[in-house]
Length: 345
Image (cartoon, rainbow, N blue to C red):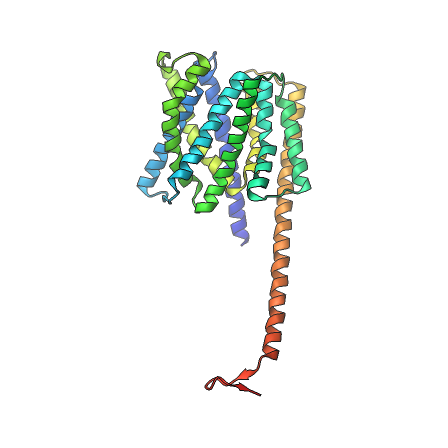
């Protein structure tokens, strides 16, 4: 039993590490690929379509080789999920285009309380006071180190709302679909990735043209840009896989809270690799955010232990009650003749 707990803890840490490393890596690769100082490949939606196309290919090869089993999930559920996921991607891109970076960061931070409220409405999930306080500390810390200028307009606000709601719903749906159909994270990703890839590759170029005013067919591809596109797609496979894995193992709220560790890592790596400014305000915000993540981990573990203790007490009380009723039944029941089936006085 103890060895199983240790193995589970190691796999949990491995899943988080994969998500953090791949997410930070893909941000760094995309920064080089999409920035004006890099290769100026400013087609984010189409690039996401490439990501899911490669992920779908990996899933197809894995299923063909027998490394993963394919379980049935109704097509309407896969289509609904893919629509929500694509709304999340498109909404985020439009939100970043129409709003200031500061308001974009605030909208991303708002996903934590939105996920909490959605889980409460959809799954009747309740949170302890310690968890709520830890979430607040994380939000404040990440807000301090990332939010700068805050400007918003009506269109940008609507896009941000769509992005936050669809992203939160998508992350909650990942966990609920895995539990509902007893399907693994990679199997679910293998089923949804082809749908998302096709839809994003069909509509992505039009969305990107609307955002940038430049058609992807006019872009002059170079070997350097192609290398970073392939690197980005490779990292996206691990990023998508680890996202489904983490949400399946934990919850959408935990994924959002601890996922902000990626924001801290991006700020530090941006300072180390791209000469980005790192002020005292950034450092203080990172310290507060990390403290909040540590407190959140402690609060969740405390909540698990409390639930386990309550369940054990309920189980024990039920067992004692059953024993008492059984004893009373044996003492009061008349003795029956086995052969005749008659009661003996």
